[in-house]
Image (cartoon, rainbow, N blue to C red; front, side):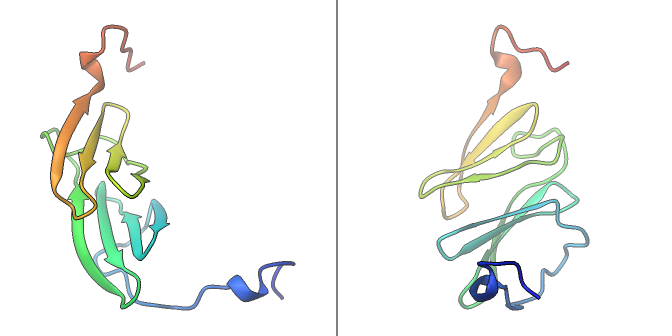
Length: 111
C-alpha cells in the first residue's frame, strides 16, 4: 500500500547504476540523475532515455578529487560538489570550472 498522496509518484525502474555498489546520495534536476557512489564519484545519467553521461570528482587529494563523500548542489548552472575541505564547480556539461579550498579562508577550522 502506498502512502497517501504517493500513488501516482511511485518510481519505476528506469535503468541499472553500473559501477555503483552503494549510492550515498541522489539528486534529480531536469533530465539528469546525479548519484554519489562509495568512491566519492558523482555519476551523472540522463533519465530519458536512461544512459550514463559523465562523472565528476573521485576520492583523493588532487584538485578535482574529494576527501569526503560529497552532496552535490545542482542548478541550471553550475554543478557544485562540496565536501568538508573544498567545493568543486562544473558546468552542467561536466566541464571543470574551479576548486574553492576552504583552508584559503582566514577563519577556516576543519575541526
